[in-house]
Amino acid sequence: MTLSSNIVADRLRASRRLVIKLGTSTVTGAEGEVCLERITPIVRSIVALKDEGRQVVLVSSGAVGLGAGRLGLSRSRLNDLVVRQACAAVGQSLLMATYGQLFATHNLKIAQVLLTEEDFADRSRCQNLRGTMEKLLKFGVLPIVNENDTVSTAELEYRGTSSFFGDNDRLAALVMSKLESEALILLTDVEGLMTSKDQGDIIPLVEVITPELRLLASGPAVGGRGGMLSKLDAAELAMRSGGIAVIASGRADTVERLFAGEQIGTTFVSTSRMHGKRRWIAYAANVRGRVIVNSGARDAIVNGKGSLLTSGVIRIEQEFAPSDVVSIVDAEGHEFARGMASRASSDTVDASTRKSGVLVMRDNIVIMA
Image 1: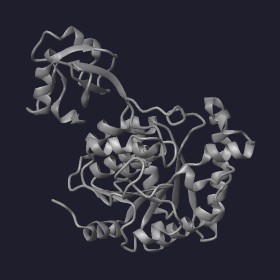
Image 2: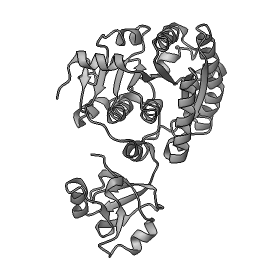
Image 3: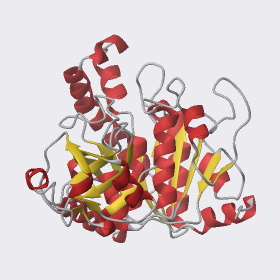
Image 4: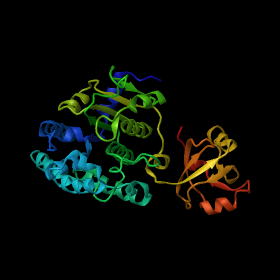
C-alpha cells in the first residue's frame, strides 16, 4: 500500500501528541551562543501547537556547544570526554535559562528532564519515566529533554554498536515511542534525506527503510553529531511505533508549514506497528550478551517463528542473566535478532546438549534484519 501525500499530511495534522527535536546546529550560532533568530520562531510554533490542544515534548541538543562557547574553548578541546562533560554542565543551565525566558513570554511552564541510557534500559525506571512525563503533560507543562551528559557518556563517546541510545535523535525517538506519540519531528540543518550523498533531490516520502537508504545516509555526518544515519534510526523507531516522522530544516517557519499541510523535508510513515515490549527489546534495552547460533537455529527463528533452543547455540561471547536482552548472531557474525533470555548464560552452557532447553522464548524475540 502506497500512501498519498495528502493522507500523510492529514495524519501529521491529526496528531495530538508529538515530539520535536532541535539539533545543535539549530540551537547554537557560529560562536557557540544561543541562536535566538532560529529558536524564537520555533518557540512560537510550539506555543501555537499547544494552544490547539496538542501535547508537545521538546528534545533539545546544544548544551555542549553552548558550554564551550561560554568557557571560550576551541572545538579541538572537545576531543576530551571530561571537557565535554564540563561543557554540558555549563551549557545545560544556559539552554534552560533561554527556554525559560522565551516560553515565559507566552505563559508556558517548562520542565527540565535529563535522561541516561539506564532510564530506558531498565523497565522499572522506564515505567517511572513515563509516569512523570504523563503527569507533566497533564499539567500542561512542556517537558524539555536532553541526555544527562554530565554523568552519562553514551552520547559524548559517539557510541553506536549494541545500543540504540547514543545521540538526541535516538533519544527523541525513544521518548516518542514510550509516550505513544503520533509524530516525531527532527529539525536540523539539512532539508531532508537526499537522493544522493553529495547532491540531489529531497526524498519526500519513505514507507520502508531499505539498505539502499541507509547507504545514502551513511556519508559524512550532517545535521549535528548523530548525522543522517541516526535520524534514519530514529525515524525507523517512530515508524515501528505506528507513528510518523519528519526530517526537515530547522528554519523558522518549518513547524508552522508542516501543520498547514505543506510537504517539507522527508516524511517517514508505515502501516505496520511493533508492540511496546518488542520495541523495548529491539531499541531501548541494553544488550547484555551475544549468542552465536547455528544455521538451523537461525532458520527456525527467522522462517519457522521458533524459540531459540540451547541446542542451537554455538557459543556465548558475553555473560548474561535471566531477563537480560541478548544479541542473536549467526555463524558469520551478523546480528539478525534480539531477545530476552529465559535463563543465565552459565545455565545455557551447561544445558547446551539438551534439545528441550529454551534460551529465548518466541514471544520475546524480535527480528532485526
